[in-house]
Length: 84
Image (cartoon, helix red, strand yellow):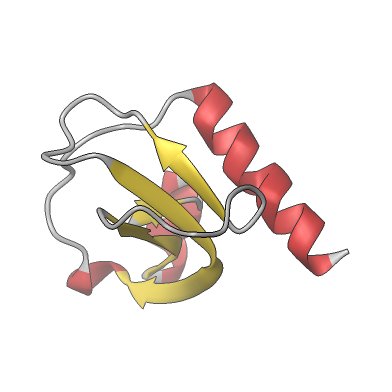
């Protein structure tokens, strides 16, 4: 999963806003999915903007990788296109 919410939000609420990641190449492109090139991911991965969730921070594992600012911006743009 890709955490979208800020650390201060996560710490204060005990939850994190996330989108699902998959290693299976999706049929639908942007804005429904976007390839993430974060260094450290074990496989080629896509963020699925249609699968946004709120998770307890206790359920989050260790951080595997960090997405770039450009990637986070693109994911948020995809979410905006879906909800507008």
